[in-house]
Image (cartoon, rainbow, N blue to C red; front, side, top):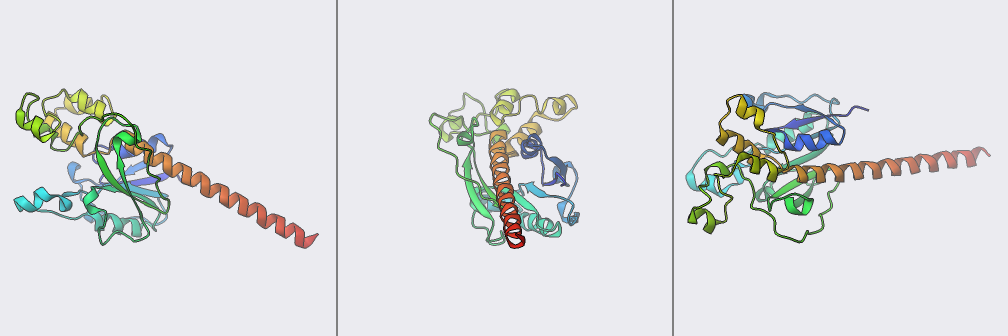
Amino acid sequence: MSNLILSLFPGLGLLDRAFEEAGYTVVRGPDILWGGDVRRFKGQRDTFVGIIGGPPCQSARTASSIRGTEAIDMIPEYIRVWDECGRPWSVMENVNGHINHPQIPKDWHPARLRDWDCGGETSRKRAFWTWPFMVMDPTPRPGEPSLSVMATTWKRGKTSSKYVTDKGFLPGDLPIEEYERLQGVPGMTASMIKAGSSRSFAVHLLGNGVPLAMGRYIATEFMKARAHDAMLALNKDYDDRKAKRSKTA
């Protein structure tokens, strides 16, 4: 059986890494960050066993509404590609504000996760929709998580800023290595910086990604569900063969 999965809106590929660790080969779809456009992409039927990804969340953000900036909802594009691919299993990630999005299929299972409870370092909260399997909520973890790395962290201000402290933002002047550590991917942007990428762009990509611990939790839950389904199928096959032997005895 194929182990190919398609990643839509991959960004820096943090969610991809979690599924690669689980043994899957990830094919990355087009991303506007690298000059691509998913709206020109057509899914290939019966090619991928699963699809993962996080459509841009600007359409759910209050800031976009206040500023009057463009807010394009790309969730329908994710669902279109999923449908064109023959509706394989799916893991879609977005902000909590989209939890009741009208175009998300009703039989997709929503879950709200916190990075810290998944074994990570931060208080980052994200919503996931999985199909056909369901993700169980992790046990709340005691302790105090770090503030979250966000796509806008690079412009949040200095550690010494009272505004940053009062708002509860993670300061924007920390070493990039600290943001990598908090996201669970030490050294991930080193090659980008060496190749000439700006620090702000690298931090933006890090903050846009799913913390690795959260991705690993989702991947583990999926593997559990797959093992459970395999066991049910094995038991059914055993029962069918047993019944057939009884009829011929």
